[in-house]
Amino acid sequence: MEIKFNLNNHLFLKDPQDSELGKKMIRHGIVLIDELGFEAFTFRKLAAKINSTEKSIYRYFENKHFMLLFLSSWYWEWVKYLIEINSRNIDDPIRKLKIAIENLVMATDENPGNTYINEHLLHKVVIKEGGKAYHIHDVDDENEAGLFYSYKSLVKLVSDIIMEVDPEFPYSLSLSSNLFEMANNQVYFADHLPRLSSLQNGKNLNKNLIKMLSYFTFRILGKD
Image (cartoon, rainbow, N blue to C red; front, side, top):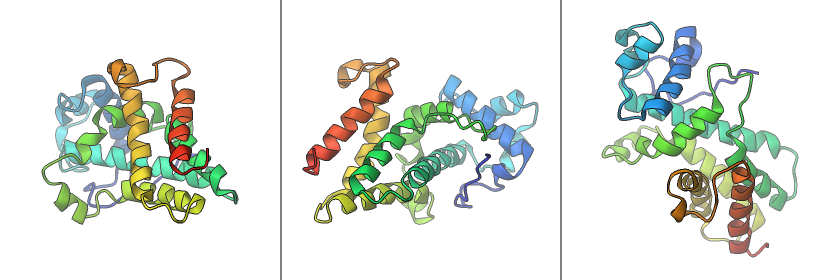
């Protein structure tokens, strides 16, 4: 099933989810950013890749920063969607939190229905480049415009589950945001800077990452 998320309309000039050209732009944009890195990625290179023009891409995005914000926001919405779907009708808050942690990690699995989004590649882009979406000079202005709503909504969702586990816990938002950041950073470290992580890159990385995040979380909450 193809999924469309209602993202902040300040992220784009024209929603790429609504046209075949836009979807093609997103699909190949993810591939190019993964291959080249965000700094080397340009709309000229994307236009050549999809046999279109730079002008056509600028009809959708003001610049490549907004395209990265769009991709990051889509991924944040995807993780939130998975947590909501998989924890639906679950009453036990500890089980719900375990599901949330699992989906923070396993959102990398591809959904065949989303033909224009490769979730695995998008996850790689978010890990390597996602911080550049909000570690910027204009972060306050963009925050005021609501451009980080999807991320804050995801963090709030997990924070609410943490509060179900322990209503007196004073740092639920901080723990929630750190879980997401840790999930991405530890994958990056294991892959590129292995001396910064206790995890090892390989087929068991996701399984061990879930185990580690669960260990920290439930130790902090006193529920181990």
